[in-house]
Length: 98
Image (cartoon, rainbow, N blue to C red; front, side):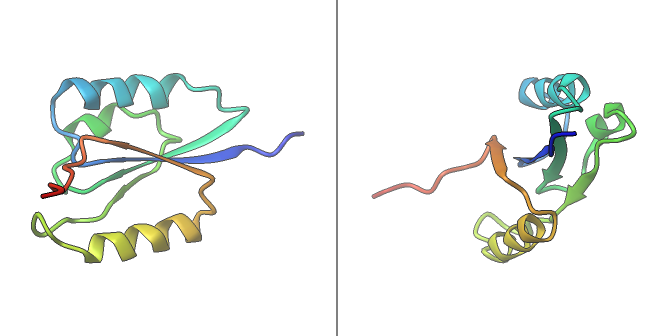
């Protein structure tokens, strides 16, 4: 038996939208014999998460404001705790470089 690769998908929210819908399709149809997938939302409002298969864990790290840096530490703790090998992010706002 081969070891599964732990993957964490991080998204700003699981509201109704295109990227969120693609995550539902991805996690429900990924090869479970090779990957163990979890989803982390940075918002407590997660209506589309109800469409996840029952074996898909959802973690919520509530982002209190645009510049809530505590999210970084909470996310790092989650990654270490679950021995995540790969993290994929969607809909993250990037900081301006200027």
